[in-house]
Length: 388
Image (tube, rainbow, N blue to C red):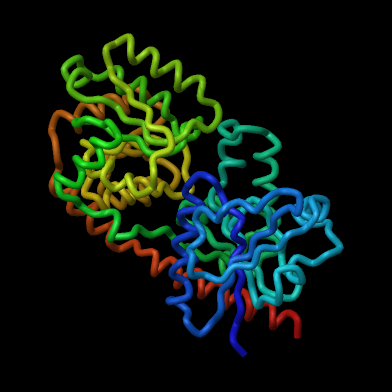
């Protein structure tokens, strides 16, 4: 019998791209080729009251099942209190991959849940609301307690899970993200300049990619940039490519302070994913000093473009950098400024660039999809054995 696997597609209906939607979209697009003997379907639950939004990031060629249910049923499903079993609404599944905010474990089929990071436990103060932090923390607890396979995107997150109730090393699968080499690659000057001209960005510049929220540490990056020597402040601008999320007041105040020093900080809101490769290629370096990450995909994307990277010396970021980036203490404005100053003064480190290209090339979405497919088969087999 052909195995049928579901992918909870909640995050593929997001209106704005983020690391989670990027990961799930790329895995969904490639998992059929990685496991052609099985059937895969995207499952999305939506309220009867509201129009179903466009599937912003769902690959068009992957079968999908949109289930319309009353709001009260949707709410009970999210809380795990519905008398209706999720799998009855979704259709029979041998196992399901859960990567969204909610978690609806199958009773008869296998469950594979993705723990993206432990922000809710490590630095809950960076989240927009205590209730949201609590919800994500409980989700992780339920996955450790319930899932046949728990998928993490870095060895760093796996290490953080150790010691938590329900952790079993044999059930945890590490599936790092990949990078698409057809998009993220060194580009010609003409192609770079065409995109930069359309975006109104002039070289030379330092680039930050990611939503503006406390965990991304953009305010401290802006302050560090404003502390560069006057010559570098005049020559370079800082380009922040990412939407305003939450907790942005400190960042906006830092931008005002930077302006008073003569530093130029450009904020690009809502940059299209297709424009990111040119932004990476055109940058003197990517500055990504997050205080915490589950992986740090912009680091890998920048390295794939041959761009120098400055990032944090903690959580998963050294892993994402693969020995090809400059690592700094993200809590020290002075350390960030000193590393920026050194990198912008000395220019391209060809040895680091070569290491970065090789490191990025070893991370493919095909490998990620194959790892996820294997975890789903293991989940199905584990649950089938338990049900005998």
